[in-house]
Structures are given as structure tokens and as C-alpha cells.
Length: 523
Image 1 (cartoon, rainbow, N blue to C red):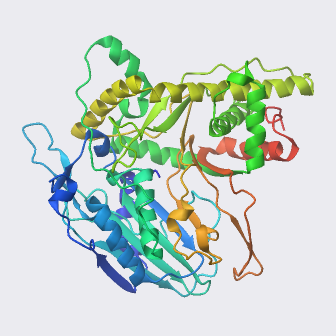
Image 2 (cartoon, one colour):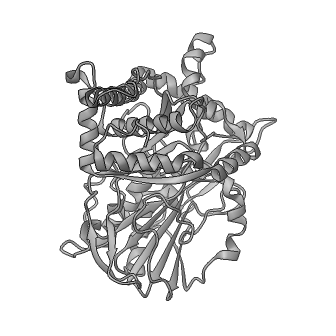
Image 3 (cartoon, helix red, strand yellow):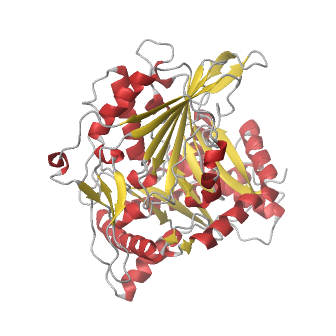
């Protein structure tokens, strides 16, 4: 999950004035104190540069549970999970500065309590979060004051429950400091909680590894730098917070959020068309998510050509890649962050057919375009995950992270001209991380639970498994039925310039209704 940022400082400063009335408060420490022997004799966890990059980022998650769960039982489960994930109950600290160099960051294992708050809501009759995975969750979430974490005794995780008395639902929210770990780490921690809550054996779950990887400084030769630095623009072009905040605020005002939903049938159709458009279909190695992103880029270019013919089309996709599973760089269950953004090779679109082209020519153009973009994405992923290449990439990446921390610079989420960025979290079952219901229950396996998170950026596509759609039988929001048509499909959430949004949605809808491949034609 990515992320709220320190850019939201005003929201954080006003937070105490907008808090709903809390009816119950708890501080939940680990079930048993941390012993140094449990972390290889350490009582601190020192951060490598990759984790310092996430110091001002928060991941927010919200699960809309179909029924109320027991808070005491939850707190007991949380306490047990904290005994496995010791650093979550710690505090972020900084070593003393030396001369002009800032001291490094570490987690002190303090066995501190995690704040759990409960709000009783007697008015709400319908929860607006029930469909889109990426709306906004601030109404229900406690916030971590990221600008104060290093200077104050702040918890690194906050939990809030909202009991919705008129609907019988419960909103379960967590705010997780991204410096603790990425989406994999947060998802695994939440899964441990639900296992303990249900009394399920956790031995089938991976145990977190607290091994931290510290890489050497990069070589100084220009050949190596010219090879790797252009591939990590978002951090190479990091900016001071004031400059980045102004740019993001301008982008947010100028753009509009889109949440697009693709069924398994839609995705399979796109995939088959991309395979058919490959020069040699038997050697096409791209994934269905590669093709889905390729489609989103294709439609963007089609819309741009119609609205602003002089604008530069997208020809490069930046991929967010996890690299867990490489023992030398990131054990599978490493506690921390293990992802990079990688610039894929640029692609070249095939020649566009003329206005008088027939259906077959249009179909071939669409298929070849999908294949060209998807293949460039897959080629980039293969290159980035090649062990020898990845190790050298991470050496330069770590060095840039180190410089960002020392110079108070922040990664730039905004896309460059001619670029689309995507971050797929499609493989993680986020809804089941909020599954508190016993086997055999009609609510089991998160069947009627929905998951939501925040943060949506311009031309930055986030891909999740979609939520089911809930129907209603009256204006009070009483549930009639659930629709799981999109199970196995995907939600793609991102922001686009307002001048493009209406036409973009119209083209996607037209494709879904009349067959994919005609979206480049003028509507």
C-alpha cells in the first residue's frame, strides 16, 4: 500500500479538532516483553537507506466488516501479533548528528503499547467506502503525525474501530508508518492478527526476518552511473518538501480520480488480444496485469490524440517491482521495504490505420499496440529482477536514498512527460487480512468484507483485487445482496487531467460494451 505523505501536514495539524468522540481507548503492548536474543541479541533495529526513504509515508487501510467483532478479543490477538513483530511496538529514534552528517535512524524495541480507539456511530445509515478500493479513508482513520515521529515518542501503528449501530457493520482501520515495512509486511502483520483472533494455527504463515541489508557505496565511473541513474528518476529527481508539496497540490487541483473495474472476462479478452498481436505468440511472456496497464496507456494516448493532438504521447512505463525472495537482498518475509520503481524500455506504437481502415486493420492495430506496450513492461521487469543487475541497481538506489535522507529530499511521485507509473498489489488478498469470522460463518473468508486504502496520484495507476458490490433495498442502506461478478478481476485507480477524464471513461465503457479494440476511434 502506498501512501499518505508528510505533504498532508495541514490535515495532520488540524486532526485533533476533527476527531470524532472516542468512547473507548486502549494501549496494547506485546503479550510478552521483547528479549534481545529474539532479534539476534539486538535491542535496536538499524535502518538501511531504503527504509529511511519511507519515513514520511503512511499506509492507511480500512476494512468494512459486515458485523461487529469483540474488542477485547481483538486486543489479545494484537498483543500476540506484536510478540512476533517486535519492532511494531518500538519507537523510531535517531543517532546523534556528527558534523554536517545526520545521524542514522533505528527502531528501539521499547515494548510500547499500540493505541486502539473505538468510536460509536449512531447516525450513519450507509458507508460510502463499500466499493472503490482507493477512495479516501481519512474519515475513519487515526493519523500518525509523521512530521513528529522522530522527535517525539509517537507510536508507529494506530488502530481505530467505528461501530455503526444502524447498519450493524464495523469499520476497522489501521495507520501504519511505511518505514516499518511495505505492503507485504503490513498485510502479513494484519493476517497474523486475524489468525490469532480466530484461534487458527499461525505455523503456516511466514515468520518475519529482521535481517537488514546494508549495501556498499556505488562505483564512481561514469559508465555505471549512466547505466543505472536514468532508471530511477523518481528518486534521482527528489525535491525539498516545499517544492514537492506545491507541485502535488497543483496536480491534485488539476486532475480528477478514476476508479475503473475490470472483470475476469475483460482481462482475459485483453490478454488474448495482446497474445494475438505479438510477433511470435508462442514467445509472448507478459502477464495479464502487464496487458491491463498496456490497455490503460493505449486509451490515454488515444484520448490525448483526440483532445490535444500536439501533446506528447506516453512511450514509457515505470513499474513498481518487489524483489523479495532474493536471500542476499531481501528474504521473502523480511521486515521492511523491498520494492523499487523501475523505468521500462520505451515502446514504439505500430502505425495507426487511417480513418477508412476496416475492422480487421483496426483489430490488428489494437492487438499490436497492446503487445508492444506489455512486452516493454515485461522486458523491464525481467531485467530488473536479474540477480546481477538488481544488486548493482540497488547499490545506486541505496546511495540515492542515503542522499535524500541527508539532504532532506523526498521522492517525486509525479510522472515525467511521456511516462505512466503503475504499482500492482493485485496478488495480495487484502480483504482476507480483515477476516475475523469463524469458518462456517456466512461472513467467513472475508466474503462480505471490503478493503479500502488511500493515496491516488496523477498517471500513477494502483491495481488491487476489486471489492464486491453491495446492493440496497431501501434508502436507509439495508443490504439486499452482494454481487461478486468482478471477483478475480481488478480495480485500477489513478488521477487524470480533468480535460481528459470524461472521454477516457467513455472510451473504456465503449470498449467494455462493444468489444475491446475500438477505443482509439473518435466517439
